[in-house]
Amino acid sequence: MSSSSSSSASPRRRLATALVHAGREPAEQFGFVNTPIYRGSTVLYPTADDLANRRSRYSYGRRGTPTSHALESALTELTGAAGVVLTPSGLSAVSVALLSVARAGDHILVADNVYEPARHVCDTVLTRLGVEIDYFDPLIGAAIAARMRPNTRLIYAEAPGSQTFEMCDIPAFVAAAHARGALAAIDNTWATALGFDGHGFGVDLVVEAGTKYLGGHADVNLGFVSAAPSAWKALKDTHGALGLCAAAEDIFLSLRGLRTLALRLERHQESALKVCDWLAGRPEVSRILNPLLPTDPGHALFKRDYAGGCGLFGVVLKPVPKPAVAAFLDALELFGMGYSWGGYESLVIPFDAAPYRTATRWQPEGPTLRFHIGLDDPADLIDDLTQGFARMAAAA
Ligand SMILES: *Cc1c(COP(=O)(O)O)cnc(C)c1O
Image 1: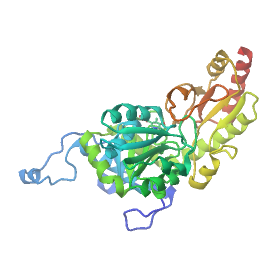
Image 2: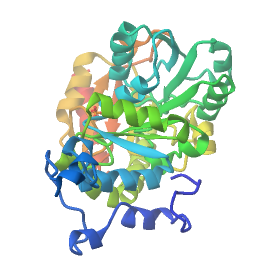
Image 3: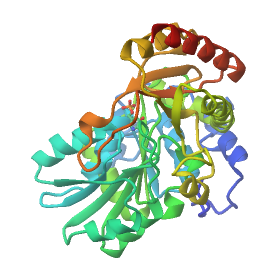
Image 4: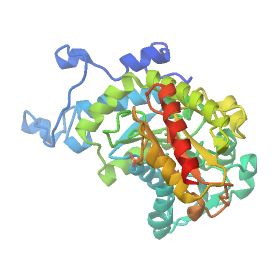
């Protein structure tokens, strides 16, 4: 959460309180605690004069409803941004952030560990529009300054990368960008605004897949972008031009998720640490990829810049045949196999980042797995992993 002051005159509230109150206007909803789901395209104007002069609080469903306004204003308060736009998915939040900045002839620096579909937007849509995409080692740190060109318009990063978990030095990226009149953008889905105060560190555009922890129950597709004053007008205009709007029910569920976000993240993180501690002692495990751990190469940056993390981390196994990994995965009863994360349930997937890296090589010493630790009791998860490893050994 940002330490900068919000637009309201009252002092900024502590996090737990802000999560309870942000974006709520019971007096406008007949006293009901929550803003309901407003479904609508048409908004009626009482008189011809009102219509001609566009005199109304809301003009058209795509352009905003009381439901979307409630979530936007809550997220604006929590991120300390100049403004927030909602999008139908996390990926469309990435796209609109990039498109709000990029012009033909621009050069954009992108960390090599970002979410793969974000690379795809860069390599297809942006490249086609005449934008040069240049990938860099996420561990580059302050040396990013040497990669800046006169036409560099943006540095885009994700910390930690949500598959391989390298930490970036975001303040160094912001300093390098701003020194040359460029902007900095990040995908903050892993830490959320609660774990990393992007705008407080000077980041111009912060993207989050609300699909993950904001929704929190594996039943929402939503994204949002928060912008500092430096990037807000272009973001708002581009979002409007592209006609992006999130679904009313997904916005409602995201608002509901927001109320318990801090509690859930705290538990996800605490349980993930317990499982990581146990995994670190297992003979099958070579190393754990999680900046929350003091043993992780990214921990110093995490400690310096972050207030918290979440339940998502990676594991590099010692070399073991593929069928043994499959036997392990198939044996697990409490971990589902599937994409996305951030819900109450625990998940595991095997992954291989090697095929899409271009600036760095991803060469782990064994098979790699990504775990999401849900709200299960971690002791039960550890029991499940124990029996999974036994099946792995039997199949090796
Ligand atoms: C899932 C994810 C996205 C995209 O979110 P969707 O809602 O699935 O489009 C973007 N960035 C990161 C880091 C993600 O994990």
